Image 1 (cartoon, rainbow, N blue to C red):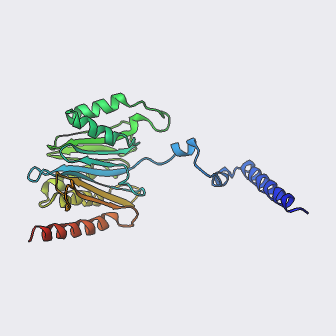
Image 2: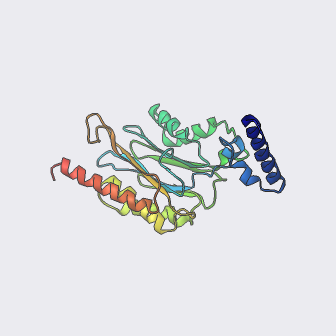
Length: 268
């Protein structure tokens, strides 16, 4: 039998098996063979269920945020910051564009509350059935520590936020309100560099129950004009733990290394 005919018969048999499988109700297995996700599959991707903290240090002028979640590489979309501008965290039924939009509006001189209102007003809500604007959660802090936070009514339970002095904690699919309450308390009561205060907040949130699905990734971003270790570098810290059974513990290890480096540079 010619080789091309053997190939054709093999393809036909595979197709026939797939159809039979779908008829038997095994459609989940059938979808795995697709080369790329369909639009429906993309819409079923989970929300960025997480808890995050934004904070400002009036003594140093540093502003930044930290985040933990049961998703892979949560830092690739939640935290956005720019020196002398502010920091944004965008999560839940997330529209990643809220990050750069928030920074741009802060650059234009809008207050955080006005930024939140403007972003929500201009959101076209392109997928209202499965990715609704009503599920968005985001927080905006300016370079002076003023902050405004929004939790949509359809963000996955438990979802909410708490605002303190120069700090905002927010999260969704959490164990309860104690998570964000304890995060703010830990931030306000912890001394030292902003990185350790943000870290203490994550640890307190996790101790209160954190993300009910567990842990996987964490990230931290802190900025200040010329605050980095190299010339013309506004990034004080940009740390990501993309996949770990203990992402907050790993983030602490990295923060402590960065702290020792700062001490050496300052000649302590």
